[in-house]
Image (cartoon, helix red, strand yellow):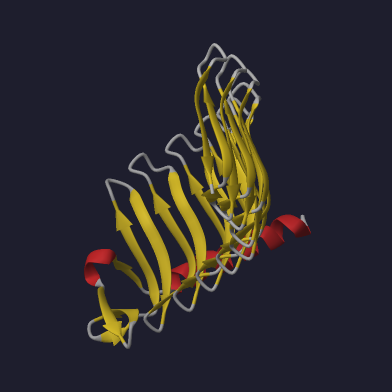
Length: 257
């Protein structure tokens, strides 16, 4: 009984709080640029209260304090379904952030800190299947970022360090077959590069140093036959270069100094 009374009491407090706030339609407010910041005014005064906008039903609603967005923010589709909800502190998104499809399915789930992405990120297809996941710190990707096909199969795996690609990179076909495999260091391709056809047959084999080809570079036809073989030094062709027809016969043989 005491719990029920407490819930009723808290509900009444919430209603009284909302009723005590000034509520204005979006058509009644004025947005002004003051020293590079957008402030909200009503009747030439910085506004404190709640701003709302409707279709035939609710469209958006947010709170304002001293002319700045402060508190919960909600935006709706015309069918009444929530589209976006988050929280503002000092006119910047701060805290949990969620977006939804018009059918109510979660689209994006993440967090912000002082207007920048900060925390785990999850993105979903409209059918509810995970589309991507990763993590951001101060607006920059950090750690593993994974993207998926709509059938749930991994599409791409990328590793970041403070917004810069650093570590293994792998890409896949929708059937699960590896498409590409390589490595990055400080945003530059470094190490072996392997590419594959959808049937699993090797397509390209090469090596890189700081985004430049280094050593043997081989490319293959889908039947497995070598198409060409070249050697690189600091990104430039060097030594013997050979090209072959799909039946294996030699087309060209050359030499670079």
